[in-house]
Image (cartoon, rainbow, N blue to C red):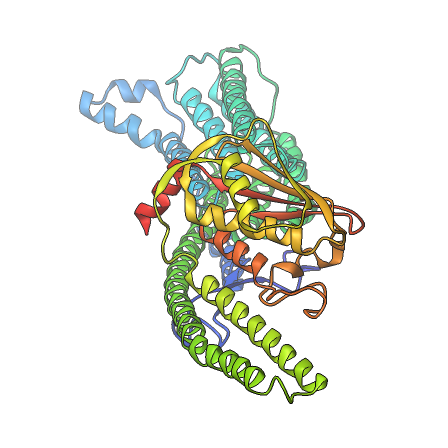
Length: 577
């Protein structure tokens, strides 16, 4: 059947898993998920298909046709013996029914297992092929019911059974081929609901067609001759499904397996071996109902149904194990993430505590240095030279800068420690108060939109953000006069603030850099500052899960947009803390 010819060399899918045992994983924790049936399974299928032929060489006959019934002899028997006589002569029909319904039961189990597999993997392949196998089983069931007269039937069983058998085999081959073609042509963009609806419609339509075909055959008074005992091809109608199964087994199903490799798809390829053997026995061997080749073919048909069922079962087991391994890996990942989060929180706390203590404790000796410089300048003011005065002024400037740096570092370490209270805040009034406290040069002005709202919010962090943004707009302006504009718009989750200036702008390549600690665009000798203002803003907004973005072409003007949460979100955040 060309099962292993030109097959891909990679027959295992690898997935990262938590370390278990050496027999299951490598040192990298990779678990192998097989994509084909074990080779021994292929050998077992071939051996099973050849076994009836080998056994028949030793004279074993699997037929159960019985002998002709003489009604006159039967009439002379006692009633209970008549019943036993008829049962013994009907052994072929009983065997046929038993074999057909066994195949139907396997088809039922297959479709239920396919549905269970789909619920776990959401893989439509198993569901489509499982439904196709079940439809083929339904056709066999209708065929058997008609043969046993359990549904309306008038045709002679000598014509009805072989004709409907051939129709069933054609239907079986075509529905499997159609299912695979449907999967090969399925568009990935189609939704799961659309695929299931289409499959349900096709499934119900096929069940109706299968029943209609069998019912029509059963009530027909004349059916075509399907058995030619003296010919080389004893059942010509069975040549059609034989060709279809050869096409499926030699090309279509191997191609499908290469496109969508799985254990189940590989088992479907192997299942074509018994399907072909079934048709060989019927097309070139069986000459009458319930004869040697007839019963062998029906037995192998059960086996042909069982092969994909076993493949589906193995695929189901592997999928279930994979889901379990994924759940374990996810659990271990979550535990590691929780541990990492706790360590990160502890590290951040230690870092903030260090920054707080360092900046606080360094202020005292820094003030001492500033005081000493002032005393030296005062004591030696009569004799000190101009260069020494310049050095003392520079030292005082540097210590003042260091003090401001420590103040900003202290403010950065305090972010998130104390949220304050939620109070009504008039954004326009707050912005104007901040602007006046910053004591900007006379040429600067602040314009607030007419529709700035009054909101209930945390005053301290919002005031700190606005103060730093307005101060930056003033401090980094390239002229002695400028205009700063404040706007605020409500959003679904809170508010969107914008602080706009008409300064020199920020180069686009610097937009992400400016929020780092100690980052300044100009040397500190040109613009006095610690480079902590935007870093403090970023940390404050991160604390409240808000965002800040920069809008500037780097030539003229900058707008800082930042989101701010609503009162409800802030209260939820504080409660969680």
